[in-house]
Image (cartoon, rainbow, N blue to C red; front, top):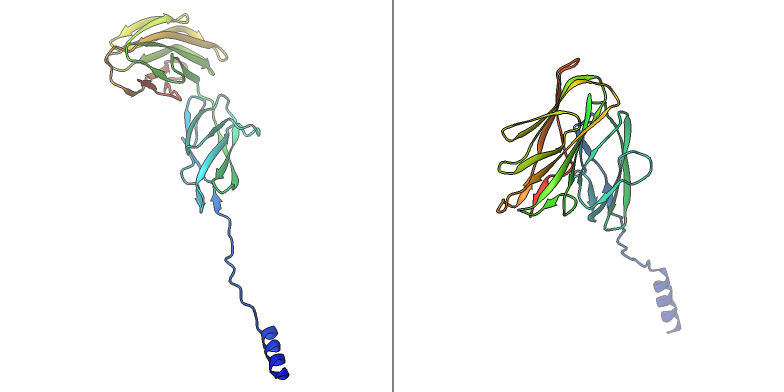
Length: 242
């Protein structure tokens, strides 16, 4: 009997204990983004699209953008698409740091070469509900600023508001103003030199009963000499009517 118990004890000690352990693998976080246009100038609004980024086992929660590549986050959002202007012509190391719900982070740096446009145009809104909202029956102000980067003669600016809206100039910035249908036009007949800054300001009335939604103001800046060009004027925001 003693030998029996000894044999059982030896058998138990000699048995291999099999434990099934599920290996844990942290979610794989991959960041990717593209810029459009791929070769922008200082007059372009650049769309960055990080929709190609993925997180296996997690949810993408935070996109932190450093457009200048200087280590300072310029914009944080939970959306994969953002827009940005670049004011100077140089190569920017655009940096995106992506975070997910599992606590993972990863960073991608991509160079973006920005060239100098003949004129850098910016449109800014002054609205009652920032950044871009206005009530039907209300009004808002628009300022268009032109940074001249190369000599131009016969520099022209044209702005068009949505059909049925009314616009009136408030400051012509030394230009000759005229109205052509729904289009507001300004002309600087003199030669304008690099480094000069020009601006105009006008008010827009949104009629009572206007449809709700997002509306785009359209505009161009052009020159006849010494280099003929015609450039669109872009905005980071549309106007939203509530």
